[in-house]
Image (tube, rainbow, N blue to C red; front, side):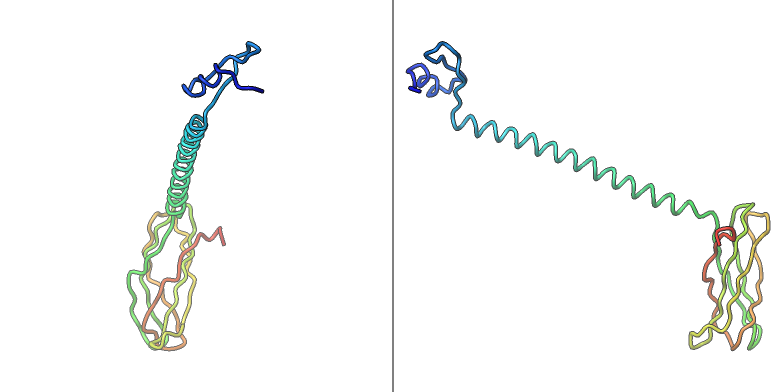
Length: 160
């Protein structure tokens, strides 16, 4: 197909269209027009990806915050070892403070340790009281002289 003078004039002037000899309008694009269009499309895609990444990042941060809050506030019980006294070579008395829901039965596990760090006694203590906070003295029998008492943890008795 021969290039007409009108088409070559339009191309050199950077025009978007020219008339072909048949009378139809033909789109004429130069190489720089194509490069410019490709850059604009790449910029649009980059902007879209940035927005999508920012939204996904915000959703991920919100999910982590929500799940952490649910985990921390979901435990409506807890225990604290206030102190202990070694009564003899085979017994220890521990002071526990437990906070829990009024209708919740909590079981806390205590263990006593020898000077070498070996376990010399262990006891599960139930707290069925219908109050929010329970303070109790608990006596542990030991197989040897205890030098420390540790609260292993507390759990809801219904959860097992």
